[in-house]
Every structure is written in C-alpha cells, then in structure tokens.
Length: 384
Ligand SMILES: NC(=O)c1ccc[n+]([C@@H]2O[C@H](COP(=O)([O-])OP(=O)(O)OC[C@H]3O[C@@H](n4cnc5c(N)ncnc54)[C@H](O)[C@@H]3O)[C@@H](O)[C@H]2O)c1
Ligand SMILES: O=P(O)(O)OC[C@@H](O)[C@@H](O)[C@H](O)[C@H](O)CO
View (cartoon, protein in one colour):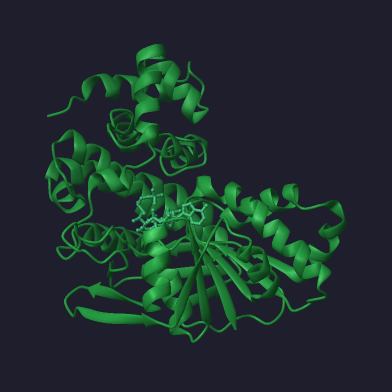
C-alpha cells in the first residue's frame, strides 16, 4: 500500500504518519515547510518521543516528502491507495484543487483501484467538507467516477502533540503523549476495509467525533483561555490552578450532559472519560503552551465548534451552562501577538463591543439570554 499524507506537522509526524509508516505502508508527506521537506528527504526517518511513565524513543522509517504545491502531488494522487490530512481546517479548501486534479488524472489513466481519503482535523466531518471542496474544483464529467471509486472517510483523531521543546535543533523531532485514538467511519470506505494497527473502525462516528471534540477540546480550550487570563503559560499549570479546573470540569460535565442525552452514553463511563482527560492535561512530560491550545479563537468561537455547539445543546435540552458561558467569555479575552484571528477578535471587540462581536462570530442571537450571560461574564473577567 502507498499513502500520501498532507501536513508533516505535529499530528502528521507524531500520530497519523507514524501509524501509516509503522503499518508498513509506503508514506509520502506533502507540506509547504521547506526545512521539514528537505530534512525528510535527506534522512527518510525521524524520532518520536513517546512520553509518559515508560518513555520510549521510536524512529519512524522509510518516509519521503514532496512540496504540497508541486505537480508531483497530482501524480501521487493518481497512484496511491490512501490520502490523509492533518493541516488544519482552514487549509482543506487550499489542497482541494490538487486533489481534484489528481482524481481527474487517476480516472483518465484507467486506475480503478479504490482510493480512500481521510481528513484528520479537529472538526465535525472534516472529510465530508473536503469532499465538497474537491467536487467544486472537479469537472462534472469526473463526479460519477469519483463517487464510484473514491471513499471520503470521516474520522475523529485524539493525541496531544505540542511542538517539540524550543531547545531542540531537529526540525523533525516530535514529542507525543502515550494515549492515542483514531476512529474512522467504516461505512464510507471504498474497497476492502484497511487493517492499520491503531485505526479503529466504527459505524457510529458522530458519537465519537462529538464525544472527543465537545469533551477534550471544550475543556482544553477553556483551560487555555482561563489559564492565560490567570497568567499561566502552560496547560499543565493552568489545570493545576483549582479555580481554572473547577470551571473546566464543570464545562465538560455540562457538555457531557448534552452528549449523554443525545447519544445515550453511560453516565459513569462518561465521568471516567472526563477524569482521564483532566489527567492528560496535567501530563508532566509535555510542555503545551496555552497559546497553542487557544490558537484561532474565531474558529473556536464559531457555531459548530467546541464552545458554542455544546452550549446550543444545553439550550436544546434545557440543561445548565454556567461554566460553558464563562469559557466563551474567557475565549473572547484571548490575546496573541502571533495569531491573526486573535488580532481580528480584538479589532471586532473595539469596533462592535462584546455583544455584537459574539453574535457575529458565533451566529448566536445578539438579543438572547445566553449572549447577555456571556457579556456579563466577559465584563467580570480580567487578566491578572
Ligand atoms: N497537535 C495536536 O495535539 C492535535 C491533535 C488532534 C488533532 N489535531 C488537528 O490536526 C491538524 C494539524 O494540527 P497540528 O497540531 O499538527 O498543526 P501543525 O501546525 O503542527 O501542522 C500543520 C502542518 O500543515 C502544514 N501545511 C500548511 N499548509 C499546507 C498545505 N497547503 N499543504 C500541506 N501542508 C500544509 C504546515 O506546514 C504544518 O507542517 C489540526 O486540524 C488540528 O486540530 C491536532
Ligand atoms: O488543534 P486545535 O487548534 O483545534 O485545538 C487545540 C488542541 O485542543 C488540540 O490540538 C488537542 O491537542 C488535540 O485535539 C488532542 O487530540
């Protein structure tokens, strides 16, 4: 088997690319970072530090890389058996054009071997969104062929992978936690189901996607935003702050009540899932900055994402949401010199004030009770 993986970043090298290579699949990374591309092609291997009580140094071998904007991508898509991505939700549209050209070339060349495409991003049904971008870029005449031969497979992906320690001079080195979970929708594959150790197949993907995004990522984001306000640099320091932890755990429980209602999860098992995640945030072997986890606040405040979607669920089922409201308010206080979305958020707040800004970025009704509650919480929160 041969695979093309877009995004040789933290999750690409530290999780998805590693699983594919470890399974003996010939792997080519596609990226735009020239230093990473050059290093992968010079060494064809890289180190992964799996940290925890039993730390291990593993070497991922037999990999190569191409520039994501080069013509080689089109030829690769015409040939490979599996395409995966871990580039960030906003980049999917950007790679769709070359995926479409690759599919057209594959069809023209008479290759009818099944191809499966799996986006591994923190979003609900990211591959389905990629498919829409690809179909938009693909001439009509190839649509029926694509439906027949190409599986667009949604997935949920979970492993905390911060950038490697600033002290490291190796651009390829990556540090990952021991825990990992990659769950894919088995109903969407074309051809035989793959047997890749570490990839789990389900016919109930939405439950897993929402469980992960609206528990781990909801709690993670609120830890980052309240952590920054309290003057903490890392997720570990933030979650060890009792005031932060109380709101984070409360928000995960509020979101959990929605998930339990919607998907019939066992309440005790869900409580254990929350506790395990809190332990992962405390991981003493990872240095994860609140600035990485809080990145792109406008995405995180959008209607379908980890803060607003669970809050909408609490409104739907008339459940409490006091802690989620504090989390949303804290997100609106997020500041980062490096992050264009944080700058945009500040500009919106200056121009429109908190009520209209929240309504604009989240799609919530500006005159709703929940927006009023967030604005009140926002006014009450101040940076240390
Ligand atoms: N890091 C984590 O803990 C984690 C865990 C689960 C899911 N995710 C998700 O995985 C995705 C990637 O996150 P990450 O933390 O690895 O980010 P990252 O910034 O480390 O990696 C993204 C990579 O994509 C590359 N890229 C940018 N534009 C590209 C293009 N046009 N073509 C090909 N490559 C391009 C970047 O150069 C970078 O190497 C995100 O959707 C994130 O939410 C991350
Ligand atoms: O990648 P983002 O920006 O959507 O979210 C930041 C973190 O919460 C995220 O990367 C987690 O580390 C990851 O989702 C763990 O599986």
